[in-house]
Image (cartoon, rainbow, N blue to C red; front, side, top):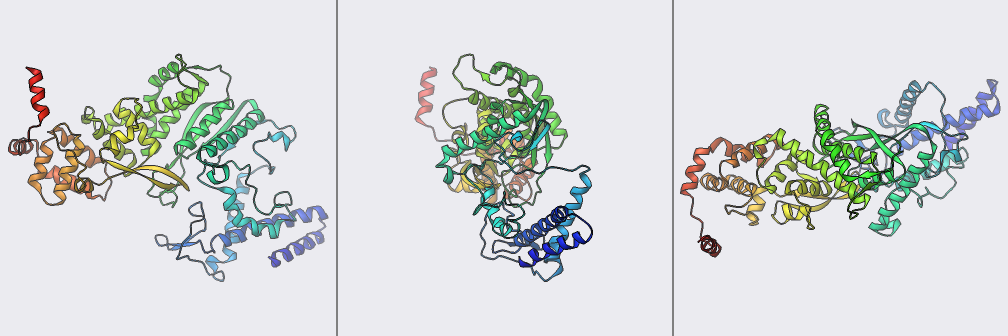
Length: 541
Protein backbone atom coordinates (compact mmCIF):
# COMPACT_ATOMS: atom_id res chain seq x y z
CA UNK A 1 0.00 0.00 0.00
CA UNK A 2 2.84 2.37 0.88
CA UNK A 3 4.56 1.55 -2.41
CA UNK A 4 1.45 2.46 -4.40
CA UNK A 5 1.12 5.81 -2.62
CA UNK A 6 4.80 6.59 -3.26
CA UNK A 7 4.36 5.74 -6.95
CA UNK A 8 1.48 8.20 -7.21
CA UNK A 9 3.68 11.11 -6.12
CA UNK A 10 6.44 10.05 -8.54
CA UNK A 11 4.00 10.03 -11.49
CA UNK A 12 2.74 13.54 -10.66
CA UNK A 13 6.31 14.89 -10.57
CA UNK A 14 7.18 13.19 -13.88
CA UNK A 15 4.12 14.62 -15.62
CA UNK A 16 4.85 18.13 -14.35
CA UNK A 17 8.33 17.90 -15.89
CA UNK A 18 6.54 17.21 -19.21
CA UNK A 19 4.94 20.69 -18.92
CA UNK A 20 1.57 19.31 -17.90
CA UNK A 21 -0.52 21.41 -15.56
CA UNK A 22 -0.80 20.31 -11.95
CA UNK A 23 -4.48 19.36 -12.49
CA UNK A 24 -3.71 17.25 -15.59
CA UNK A 25 -0.77 15.59 -13.85
CA UNK A 26 -2.93 14.68 -10.87
CA UNK A 27 -5.72 13.34 -13.12
CA UNK A 28 -3.24 11.19 -15.03
CA UNK A 29 -1.69 9.95 -11.79
CA UNK A 30 -5.10 9.20 -10.29
CA UNK A 31 -6.05 7.13 -13.35
CA UNK A 32 -2.88 5.01 -13.14
CA UNK A 33 -3.24 4.75 -9.38
CA UNK A 34 -6.82 3.50 -9.81
CA UNK A 35 -5.80 0.75 -12.24
CA UNK A 36 -2.91 -0.31 -10.00
CA UNK A 37 -5.39 -0.60 -7.12
CA UNK A 38 -7.76 -2.67 -9.25
CA UNK A 39 -4.82 -4.97 -10.00
CA UNK A 40 -4.25 -5.24 -6.25
CA UNK A 41 -7.91 -6.21 -5.89
CA UNK A 42 -7.41 -9.02 -8.40
CA UNK A 43 -4.38 -10.24 -6.47
CA UNK A 44 -6.45 -10.29 -3.27
CA UNK A 45 -9.28 -12.11 -5.05
CA UNK A 46 -6.94 -14.99 -5.93
CA UNK A 47 -5.12 -15.10 -2.59
CA UNK A 48 -7.42 -15.53 0.38
CA UNK A 49 -8.59 -18.32 2.70
CA UNK A 50 -11.70 -18.59 0.47
CA UNK A 51 -9.89 -19.48 -2.75
CA UNK A 52 -9.99 -23.13 -3.80
CA UNK A 53 -8.39 -25.47 -6.31
CA UNK A 54 -10.16 -26.22 -9.61
CA UNK A 55 -8.90 -29.69 -10.52
CA UNK A 56 -10.68 -29.67 -13.91
CA UNK A 57 -8.79 -26.55 -15.01
CA UNK A 58 -5.59 -27.05 -13.03
CA UNK A 59 -5.88 -23.56 -11.57
CA UNK A 60 -7.02 -21.56 -8.56
CA UNK A 61 -10.62 -20.43 -8.32
CA UNK A 62 -11.04 -16.83 -7.23
CA UNK A 63 -12.63 -15.91 -3.91
CA UNK A 64 -16.07 -15.15 -5.36
CA UNK A 65 -16.41 -17.92 -7.94
CA UNK A 66 -19.75 -18.71 -6.26
CA UNK A 67 -20.90 -15.09 -5.90
CA UNK A 68 -20.78 -15.45 -2.11
CA UNK A 69 -18.46 -16.02 0.84
CA UNK A 70 -18.06 -19.78 0.36
CA UNK A 71 -15.89 -21.14 3.15
CA UNK A 72 -13.53 -24.00 2.38
CA UNK A 73 -11.25 -26.14 4.53
CA UNK A 74 -8.73 -26.79 1.76
CA UNK A 75 -8.05 -23.36 0.30
CA UNK A 76 -5.43 -22.79 -2.38
CA UNK A 77 -3.39 -19.69 -3.09
CA UNK A 78 -0.90 -18.63 -5.71
CA UNK A 79 2.77 -17.80 -5.42
CA UNK A 80 2.88 -14.00 -5.66
CA UNK A 81 6.54 -14.19 -6.69
CA UNK A 82 5.79 -16.47 -9.65
CA UNK A 83 5.03 -14.81 -13.00
CA UNK A 84 1.65 -16.43 -13.72
CA UNK A 85 0.15 -15.59 -10.30
CA UNK A 86 2.09 -12.46 -9.34
CA UNK A 87 1.09 -8.80 -9.20
CA UNK A 88 2.56 -8.45 -12.72
CA UNK A 89 -0.04 -10.98 -13.95
CA UNK A 90 -2.80 -8.92 -12.34
CA UNK A 91 -1.54 -5.72 -13.95
CA UNK A 92 -1.35 -7.36 -17.40
CA UNK A 93 -4.91 -8.62 -16.95
CA UNK A 94 -6.13 -5.10 -16.08
CA UNK A 95 -4.25 -3.68 -19.08
CA UNK A 96 -5.84 -6.24 -21.41
CA UNK A 97 -9.31 -5.24 -20.20
CA UNK A 98 -8.45 -1.54 -20.46
CA UNK A 99 -7.20 -1.94 -24.02
CA UNK A 100 -10.40 -3.77 -24.97
CA UNK A 101 -12.55 -1.02 -23.48
CA UNK A 102 -10.47 1.69 -25.20
CA UNK A 103 -10.81 0.00 -28.59
CA UNK A 104 -14.61 -0.01 -28.24
CA UNK A 105 -14.89 3.57 -26.94
CA UNK A 106 -14.45 6.18 -29.65
CA UNK A 107 -15.75 9.00 -27.47
CA UNK A 108 -15.19 10.18 -23.93
CA UNK A 109 -17.60 8.91 -21.29
CA UNK A 110 -18.92 10.29 -18.02
CA UNK A 111 -18.94 8.03 -14.99
CA UNK A 112 -21.14 9.19 -12.13
CA UNK A 113 -21.75 7.69 -8.71
CA UNK A 114 -25.32 8.11 -7.55
CA UNK A 115 -28.56 6.55 -6.36
CA UNK A 116 -30.36 4.74 -9.19
CA UNK A 117 -33.69 5.41 -7.47
CA UNK A 118 -33.22 9.14 -8.11
CA UNK A 119 -33.54 10.63 -11.63
CA UNK A 120 -30.15 11.02 -13.36
CA UNK A 121 -30.92 14.73 -13.76
CA UNK A 122 -29.96 15.02 -10.08
CA UNK A 123 -26.40 14.13 -11.08
CA UNK A 124 -26.23 14.98 -14.80
CA UNK A 125 -27.51 18.37 -16.04
CA UNK A 126 -30.05 18.25 -18.89
CA UNK A 127 -30.33 14.47 -18.61
CA UNK A 128 -32.56 13.00 -21.27
CA UNK A 129 -31.58 9.68 -22.77
CA UNK A 130 -32.35 7.84 -25.98
CA UNK A 131 -31.27 4.51 -24.48
CA UNK A 132 -30.87 3.26 -20.92
CA UNK A 133 -29.32 -0.18 -20.37
CA UNK A 134 -29.30 -2.01 -17.06
CA UNK A 135 -28.45 -5.45 -15.72
CA UNK A 136 -30.47 -5.25 -12.50
CA UNK A 137 -29.76 -6.92 -9.18
CA UNK A 138 -31.44 -10.31 -9.20
CA UNK A 139 -33.52 -10.34 -6.05
CA UNK A 140 -31.42 -11.97 -3.31
CA UNK A 141 -29.00 -14.10 -5.31
CA UNK A 142 -25.99 -11.82 -4.82
CA UNK A 143 -25.46 -9.58 -1.79
CA UNK A 144 -23.35 -7.06 -3.66
CA UNK A 145 -22.53 -4.71 -0.80
CA UNK A 146 -21.50 -7.50 1.57
CA UNK A 147 -19.19 -8.96 -1.08
CA UNK A 148 -17.82 -5.51 -1.95
CA UNK A 149 -16.64 -5.08 1.65
CA UNK A 150 -13.89 -7.60 0.87
CA UNK A 151 -12.33 -5.10 -1.55
CA UNK A 152 -13.62 -1.90 0.04
CA UNK A 153 -11.42 -2.10 3.13
CA UNK A 154 -8.34 -2.27 0.90
CA UNK A 155 -9.39 0.24 -1.74
CA UNK A 156 -10.30 2.74 0.97
CA UNK A 157 -6.67 2.76 2.15
CA UNK A 158 -5.33 3.67 -1.28
CA UNK A 159 -8.13 5.60 -3.03
CA UNK A 160 -9.85 7.53 -0.26
CA UNK A 161 -8.15 10.80 -1.26
CA UNK A 162 -8.89 10.17 -4.95
CA UNK A 163 -12.59 9.32 -4.59
CA UNK A 164 -13.66 10.73 -1.19
CA UNK A 165 -17.34 10.75 -2.24
CA UNK A 166 -17.27 6.97 -2.74
CA UNK A 167 -15.04 5.90 0.13
CA UNK A 168 -16.12 8.05 3.06
CA UNK A 169 -17.92 5.42 5.15
CA UNK A 170 -16.68 2.63 7.39
CA UNK A 171 -17.94 -0.01 4.94
CA UNK A 172 -20.20 -0.16 1.89
CA UNK A 173 -23.70 1.36 2.30
CA UNK A 174 -26.36 -1.33 2.56
CA UNK A 175 -29.62 0.23 3.82
CA UNK A 176 -30.95 1.22 0.37
CA UNK A 177 -29.30 -1.57 -1.63
CA UNK A 178 -31.71 -3.03 -4.21
CA UNK A 179 -31.59 -6.63 -3.01
CA UNK A 180 -33.86 -8.92 -1.02
CA UNK A 181 -32.30 -9.77 2.33
CA UNK A 182 -34.58 -11.35 4.94
CA UNK A 183 -32.14 -10.62 7.79
CA UNK A 184 -31.82 -6.95 6.92
CA UNK A 185 -35.47 -6.44 5.96
CA UNK A 186 -37.11 -8.45 8.74
CA UNK A 187 -38.39 -11.65 7.12
CA UNK A 188 -39.36 -13.27 3.83
CA UNK A 189 -42.52 -11.22 3.13
CA UNK A 190 -40.89 -7.90 4.05
CA UNK A 191 -37.86 -8.59 1.89
CA UNK A 192 -40.16 -9.27 -1.08
CA UNK A 193 -42.01 -6.02 -0.48
CA UNK A 194 -38.80 -4.03 -0.10
CA UNK A 195 -37.25 -5.44 -3.27
CA UNK A 196 -40.30 -4.80 -5.47
CA UNK A 197 -40.76 -1.31 -4.03
CA UNK A 198 -37.09 -0.43 -4.57
CA UNK A 199 -37.08 -1.77 -8.13
CA UNK A 200 -40.23 0.20 -8.89
CA UNK A 201 -38.53 3.38 -7.60
CA UNK A 202 -35.55 2.71 -9.88
CA UNK A 203 -37.67 1.95 -12.94
CA UNK A 204 -39.78 5.10 -12.40
CA UNK A 205 -36.60 7.19 -12.23
CA UNK A 206 -35.42 5.65 -15.50
CA UNK A 207 -38.80 6.21 -17.12
CA UNK A 208 -38.67 9.89 -16.19
CA UNK A 209 -35.14 10.21 -17.63
CA UNK A 210 -35.96 8.51 -20.92
CA UNK A 211 -36.93 10.53 -23.98
CA UNK A 212 -40.47 9.93 -25.25
CA UNK A 213 -39.24 7.64 -28.04
CA UNK A 214 -36.34 6.19 -26.05
CA UNK A 215 -35.67 2.52 -25.32
CA UNK A 216 -35.04 0.92 -21.95
CA UNK A 217 -32.98 -2.29 -22.25
CA UNK A 218 -33.35 -4.71 -19.36
CA UNK A 219 -31.00 -7.69 -19.10
CA UNK A 220 -32.54 -10.43 -16.97
CA UNK A 221 -31.53 -13.99 -16.13
CA UNK A 222 -32.68 -14.97 -12.64
CA UNK A 223 -35.59 -17.44 -12.79
CA UNK A 224 -36.53 -17.97 -9.14
CA UNK A 225 -40.27 -17.34 -8.95
CA UNK A 226 -40.17 -14.34 -6.63
CA UNK A 227 -37.31 -12.64 -8.49
CA UNK A 228 -38.97 -12.97 -11.89
CA UNK A 229 -42.44 -11.99 -10.71
CA UNK A 230 -41.34 -9.07 -8.52
CA UNK A 231 -39.06 -7.52 -11.13
CA UNK A 232 -41.58 -7.79 -13.98
CA UNK A 233 -44.42 -6.46 -11.83
CA UNK A 234 -42.28 -3.48 -10.78
CA UNK A 235 -41.34 -2.86 -14.43
CA UNK A 236 -44.95 -2.81 -15.63
CA UNK A 237 -46.17 -0.73 -12.67
CA UNK A 238 -43.53 1.93 -13.40
CA UNK A 239 -44.95 2.71 -16.83
CA UNK A 240 -43.07 0.46 -19.27
CA UNK A 241 -44.26 -2.11 -21.75
CA UNK A 242 -42.18 -4.79 -23.45
CA UNK A 243 -41.79 -4.39 -27.20
CA UNK A 244 -39.13 -7.00 -28.06
CA UNK A 245 -37.24 -9.87 -26.45
CA UNK A 246 -33.97 -11.58 -27.29
CA UNK A 247 -32.20 -14.57 -25.82
CA UNK A 248 -28.43 -14.47 -25.31
CA UNK A 249 -26.32 -17.45 -24.22
CA UNK A 250 -24.27 -15.90 -21.43
CA UNK A 251 -23.31 -18.46 -18.77
CA UNK A 252 -20.50 -21.00 -19.13
CA UNK A 253 -21.62 -24.60 -18.48
CA UNK A 254 -18.78 -25.10 -15.96
CA UNK A 255 -19.58 -21.98 -13.90
CA UNK A 256 -19.82 -23.09 -10.27
CA UNK A 257 -22.92 -21.03 -9.59
CA UNK A 258 -24.93 -22.85 -12.31
CA UNK A 259 -23.16 -26.16 -12.92
CA UNK A 260 -25.51 -29.09 -12.32
CA UNK A 261 -28.19 -26.76 -11.04
CA UNK A 262 -31.74 -25.88 -12.09
CA UNK A 263 -30.69 -22.57 -13.57
CA UNK A 264 -30.65 -20.69 -16.85
CA UNK A 265 -27.87 -20.51 -19.41
CA UNK A 266 -29.66 -17.99 -21.63
CA UNK A 267 -30.32 -14.43 -20.50
CA UNK A 268 -33.38 -12.58 -21.72
CA UNK A 269 -32.87 -9.07 -23.04
CA UNK A 270 -36.09 -7.06 -22.86
CA UNK A 271 -36.56 -3.96 -24.97
CA UNK A 272 -39.04 -1.68 -23.19
CA UNK A 273 -40.64 1.64 -24.07
CA UNK A 274 -42.89 4.08 -22.31
CA UNK A 275 -46.39 2.68 -21.95
CA UNK A 276 -49.16 4.79 -23.49
CA UNK A 277 -52.12 2.40 -23.22
CA UNK A 278 -54.96 2.40 -20.73
CA UNK A 279 -55.06 -1.29 -19.87
CA UNK A 280 -57.14 -4.17 -21.16
CA UNK A 281 -58.85 -7.44 -20.34
CA UNK A 282 -57.20 -10.79 -19.72
CA UNK A 283 -59.22 -12.40 -22.53
CA UNK A 284 -57.54 -10.09 -25.07
CA UNK A 285 -54.08 -11.20 -23.89
CA UNK A 286 -55.01 -14.89 -24.07
CA UNK A 287 -56.40 -14.35 -27.56
CA UNK A 288 -53.13 -12.71 -28.63
CA UNK A 289 -51.13 -15.67 -27.32
CA UNK A 290 -53.17 -18.06 -29.46
CA UNK A 291 -51.73 -16.44 -32.60
CA UNK A 292 -48.22 -15.46 -31.42
CA UNK A 293 -47.02 -18.26 -29.15
CA UNK A 294 -46.64 -21.07 -31.69
CA UNK A 295 -44.43 -19.02 -34.10
CA UNK A 296 -42.37 -17.82 -31.14
CA UNK A 297 -41.76 -21.35 -29.89
CA UNK A 298 -40.63 -22.42 -33.35
CA UNK A 299 -38.26 -19.45 -33.44
CA UNK A 300 -36.81 -20.32 -30.03
CA UNK A 301 -36.29 -23.90 -31.19
CA UNK A 302 -34.48 -22.71 -34.33
CA UNK A 303 -32.19 -20.59 -32.14
CA UNK A 304 -31.23 -23.71 -30.19
CA UNK A 305 -32.92 -22.56 -26.98
CA UNK A 306 -33.68 -25.62 -24.82
CA UNK A 307 -34.67 -26.68 -21.31
CA UNK A 308 -35.41 -23.99 -18.71
CA UNK A 309 -34.41 -21.33 -21.25
CA UNK A 310 -37.13 -22.54 -23.62
CA UNK A 311 -39.78 -22.08 -20.94
CA UNK A 312 -38.40 -18.68 -19.99
CA UNK A 313 -38.49 -17.61 -23.64
CA UNK A 314 -42.16 -18.61 -23.84
CA UNK A 315 -42.97 -16.74 -20.65
CA UNK A 316 -41.15 -13.68 -21.95
CA UNK A 317 -43.38 -13.74 -25.04
CA UNK A 318 -46.43 -13.95 -22.77
CA UNK A 319 -45.16 -11.00 -20.74
CA UNK A 320 -44.77 -8.99 -23.92
CA UNK A 321 -48.45 -9.54 -24.74
CA UNK A 322 -49.54 -8.76 -21.16
CA UNK A 323 -47.48 -5.56 -21.00
CA UNK A 324 -49.26 -4.08 -24.03
CA UNK A 325 -52.54 -4.11 -22.09
CA UNK A 326 -51.26 -3.36 -18.60
CA UNK A 327 -52.82 -3.07 -16.09
CA UNK A 328 -54.76 -6.23 -16.83
CA UNK A 329 -58.40 -6.40 -15.80
CA UNK A 330 -60.64 -9.29 -14.88
CA UNK A 331 -64.20 -8.77 -16.21
CA UNK A 332 -65.50 -10.63 -13.15
CA UNK A 333 -63.28 -8.50 -10.87
CA UNK A 334 -62.09 -11.56 -8.94
CA UNK A 335 -58.37 -11.46 -9.76
CA UNK A 336 -55.86 -8.64 -9.27
CA UNK A 337 -53.49 -7.54 -12.08
CA UNK A 338 -50.67 -9.42 -10.33
CA UNK A 339 -52.73 -12.63 -10.19
CA UNK A 340 -53.69 -12.20 -13.84
CA UNK A 341 -50.01 -11.87 -14.72
CA UNK A 342 -49.37 -15.22 -13.01
CA UNK A 343 -52.24 -16.70 -15.03
CA UNK A 344 -50.63 -15.49 -18.26
CA UNK A 345 -47.31 -17.12 -17.27
CA UNK A 346 -49.16 -20.37 -16.47
CA UNK A 347 -50.74 -20.27 -19.93
CA UNK A 348 -47.29 -19.86 -21.51
CA UNK A 349 -46.09 -23.06 -19.83
CA UNK A 350 -49.23 -24.80 -21.09
CA UNK A 351 -48.27 -23.88 -24.66
CA UNK A 352 -44.75 -25.21 -24.04
CA UNK A 353 -46.17 -28.48 -22.69
CA UNK A 354 -48.28 -29.09 -25.79
CA UNK A 355 -45.51 -28.01 -28.18
CA UNK A 356 -42.79 -30.15 -26.59
CA UNK A 357 -45.09 -33.17 -26.33
CA UNK A 358 -45.83 -33.00 -30.06
CA UNK A 359 -42.13 -32.66 -30.82
CA UNK A 360 -40.48 -35.28 -28.61
CA UNK A 361 -43.21 -37.87 -28.12
CA UNK A 362 -46.52 -37.26 -29.90
CA UNK A 363 -47.49 -40.85 -29.11
CA UNK A 364 -47.78 -40.02 -25.38
CA UNK A 365 -50.22 -37.13 -25.81
CA UNK A 366 -53.03 -39.09 -24.22
CA UNK A 367 -51.15 -40.65 -21.30
CA UNK A 368 -51.91 -39.86 -17.67
CA UNK A 369 -50.85 -36.50 -16.20
CA UNK A 370 -48.18 -37.92 -13.86
CA UNK A 371 -46.39 -39.75 -16.70
CA UNK A 372 -46.58 -36.77 -19.02
CA UNK A 373 -45.23 -34.49 -16.27
CA UNK A 374 -42.29 -36.83 -15.67
CA UNK A 375 -41.37 -37.11 -19.37
CA UNK A 376 -41.62 -33.36 -19.98
CA UNK A 377 -39.80 -32.38 -16.79
CA UNK A 378 -36.92 -34.79 -17.49
CA UNK A 379 -36.68 -33.41 -21.03
CA UNK A 380 -36.70 -29.77 -19.98
CA UNK A 381 -34.78 -29.94 -16.68
CA UNK A 382 -33.14 -33.34 -16.32
CA UNK A 383 -33.01 -34.23 -12.59
CA UNK A 384 -33.98 -31.01 -10.78
CA UNK A 385 -36.84 -28.58 -11.45
CA UNK A 386 -37.26 -25.16 -9.79
CA UNK A 387 -40.44 -25.37 -7.73
CA UNK A 388 -42.15 -22.48 -9.54
CA UNK A 389 -41.58 -24.15 -12.91
CA UNK A 390 -42.67 -27.54 -11.53
CA UNK A 391 -45.92 -25.97 -10.30
CA UNK A 392 -46.71 -24.43 -13.69
CA UNK A 393 -45.77 -27.61 -15.54
CA UNK A 394 -47.88 -29.78 -13.21
CA UNK A 395 -50.79 -27.38 -13.63
CA UNK A 396 -50.53 -27.66 -17.42
CA UNK A 397 -50.44 -31.47 -17.29
CA UNK A 398 -53.31 -31.78 -14.82
CA UNK A 399 -55.43 -29.28 -16.73
CA UNK A 400 -56.87 -27.87 -13.53
CA UNK A 401 -56.66 -24.75 -11.44
CA UNK A 402 -57.82 -26.30 -8.19
CA UNK A 403 -56.96 -24.98 -4.77
CA UNK A 404 -54.48 -27.75 -3.94
CA UNK A 405 -50.78 -27.67 -4.78
CA UNK A 406 -50.34 -29.40 -8.18
CA UNK A 407 -46.74 -30.39 -7.33
CA UNK A 408 -47.96 -32.21 -4.23
CA UNK A 409 -50.68 -33.98 -6.20
CA UNK A 410 -48.56 -35.04 -9.16
CA UNK A 411 -45.12 -35.63 -7.63
CA UNK A 412 -44.92 -35.55 -3.85
CA UNK A 413 -47.91 -37.72 -2.98
CA UNK A 414 -46.87 -40.26 -5.63
CA UNK A 415 -43.24 -40.44 -4.49
CA UNK A 416 -42.13 -39.25 -7.93
CA UNK A 417 -39.99 -36.56 -6.38
CA UNK A 418 -39.18 -34.65 -3.22
CA UNK A 419 -38.71 -30.99 -2.37
CA UNK A 420 -35.45 -29.52 -1.16
CA UNK A 421 -33.58 -26.24 -1.28
CA UNK A 422 -30.63 -25.64 -3.55
CA UNK A 423 -28.24 -22.76 -4.01
CA UNK A 424 -28.66 -21.35 -7.54
CA UNK A 425 -26.79 -18.16 -8.45
CA UNK A 426 -26.15 -17.64 -4.75
CA UNK A 427 -29.82 -17.80 -3.73
CA UNK A 428 -31.57 -20.56 -1.81
CA UNK A 429 -34.26 -21.83 -4.17
CA UNK A 430 -36.92 -24.50 -3.58
CA UNK A 431 -36.59 -27.30 -6.13
CA UNK A 432 -38.19 -30.64 -7.00
CA UNK A 433 -35.68 -33.49 -7.25
CA UNK A 434 -36.81 -36.72 -8.92
CA UNK A 435 -36.58 -39.96 -6.96
CA UNK A 436 -34.65 -42.83 -8.56
CA UNK A 437 -36.86 -45.77 -9.66
CA UNK A 438 -35.11 -48.29 -7.42
CA UNK A 439 -35.55 -45.98 -4.42
CA UNK A 440 -39.30 -45.66 -5.12
CA UNK A 441 -39.49 -49.46 -5.42
CA UNK A 442 -37.69 -50.12 -2.16
CA UNK A 443 -39.79 -47.53 -0.31
CA UNK A 444 -43.02 -49.03 -1.69
CA UNK A 445 -43.92 -45.75 -3.42
CA UNK A 446 -45.01 -47.44 -6.65
CA UNK A 447 -48.63 -48.16 -7.45
CA UNK A 448 -48.98 -51.39 -9.44
CA UNK A 449 -52.74 -51.48 -9.99
CA UNK A 450 -54.15 -51.38 -13.52
CA UNK A 451 -55.18 -47.74 -13.18
CA UNK A 452 -51.80 -46.61 -11.84
CA UNK A 453 -49.73 -44.02 -13.75
CA UNK A 454 -47.72 -45.60 -16.56
CA UNK A 455 -44.52 -44.18 -15.10
CA UNK A 456 -45.10 -46.24 -11.94
CA UNK A 457 -45.20 -49.45 -13.99
CA UNK A 458 -42.10 -48.35 -15.86
CA UNK A 459 -40.20 -47.51 -12.68
CA UNK A 460 -41.29 -50.86 -11.25
CA UNK A 461 -39.88 -52.65 -14.30
CA UNK A 462 -36.68 -50.53 -14.27
CA UNK A 463 -36.08 -51.40 -10.60
CA UNK A 464 -36.65 -55.12 -11.27
CA UNK A 465 -34.26 -55.06 -14.25
CA UNK A 466 -31.65 -53.49 -11.98
CA UNK A 467 -32.06 -56.56 -9.76
CA UNK A 468 -31.79 -58.89 -12.82
CA UNK A 469 -35.44 -59.96 -12.59
CA UNK A 470 -36.33 -59.87 -16.31
CA UNK A 471 -39.50 -61.99 -16.15
CA UNK A 472 -40.97 -59.97 -13.28
CA UNK A 473 -39.99 -56.73 -15.06
CA UNK A 474 -41.82 -57.86 -18.18
CA UNK A 475 -44.91 -58.69 -16.14
CA UNK A 476 -44.75 -55.32 -14.36
CA UNK A 477 -44.54 -53.50 -17.68
CA UNK A 478 -47.39 -55.54 -19.13
CA UNK A 479 -49.75 -53.96 -16.60
CA UNK A 480 -49.45 -50.67 -18.52
CA UNK A 481 -49.85 -52.24 -21.96
CA UNK A 482 -48.09 -51.49 -25.24
CA UNK A 483 -48.20 -47.71 -24.62
CA UNK A 484 -45.49 -48.26 -22.00
CA UNK A 485 -43.06 -48.97 -24.86
CA UNK A 486 -43.87 -45.56 -26.35
CA UNK A 487 -43.08 -43.90 -23.03
CA UNK A 488 -39.89 -45.97 -22.68
CA UNK A 489 -38.75 -44.87 -26.14
CA UNK A 490 -39.44 -41.23 -25.27
CA UNK A 491 -37.48 -41.49 -22.02
CA UNK A 492 -34.58 -43.23 -23.72
CA UNK A 493 -34.33 -40.32 -26.18
CA UNK A 494 -34.44 -37.56 -23.58
CA UNK A 495 -32.51 -38.91 -20.56
CA UNK A 496 -28.92 -37.75 -20.39
CA UNK A 497 -25.88 -40.02 -20.47
CA UNK A 498 -24.58 -41.57 -18.30
CA UNK A 499 -27.62 -42.69 -16.36
CA UNK A 500 -28.48 -45.97 -14.61
CA UNK A 501 -32.15 -45.35 -15.39
CA UNK A 502 -31.37 -44.88 -19.10
CA UNK A 503 -29.24 -48.05 -19.19
CA UNK A 504 -32.04 -50.09 -17.63
CA UNK A 505 -34.59 -48.58 -20.03
CA UNK A 506 -32.35 -49.57 -22.93
CA UNK A 507 -32.26 -53.13 -21.58
CA UNK A 508 -36.05 -53.20 -21.41
CA UNK A 509 -36.37 -51.91 -24.98
CA UNK A 510 -33.91 -54.53 -26.28
CA UNK A 511 -35.58 -57.46 -24.55
CA UNK A 512 -39.29 -56.65 -24.56
CA UNK A 513 -41.70 -56.43 -27.51
CA UNK A 514 -45.46 -55.74 -27.74
CA UNK A 515 -46.02 -59.47 -28.31
CA UNK A 516 -44.03 -60.44 -25.21
CA UNK A 517 -46.05 -57.95 -23.17
CA UNK A 518 -49.26 -59.69 -24.24
CA UNK A 519 -47.80 -63.06 -23.21
CA UNK A 520 -46.54 -61.66 -19.92
CA UNK A 521 -49.95 -60.15 -19.21
CA UNK A 522 -51.63 -63.51 -19.80
CA UNK A 523 -49.27 -65.30 -17.40
CA UNK A 524 -49.20 -62.55 -14.79
CA UNK A 525 -50.57 -63.37 -11.38
CA UNK A 526 -54.23 -62.39 -11.25
CA UNK A 527 -55.01 -59.38 -9.15
CA UNK A 528 -56.75 -60.11 -5.87
CA UNK A 529 -60.39 -58.93 -6.14
CA UNK A 530 -61.38 -56.01 -3.94
CA UNK A 531 -64.74 -55.36 -2.30
CA UNK A 532 -65.17 -52.34 -4.58
CA UNK A 533 -65.09 -54.66 -7.61
CA UNK A 534 -68.22 -56.47 -6.39
CA UNK A 535 -69.90 -53.18 -5.56
CA UNK A 536 -69.26 -51.88 -9.08
CA UNK A 537 -70.63 -55.12 -10.57
CA UNK A 538 -73.74 -54.82 -8.42
CA UNK A 539 -74.25 -51.22 -9.58
CA UNK A 540 -74.13 -52.34 -13.22
CA UNK A 541 -76.89 -54.87 -12.57
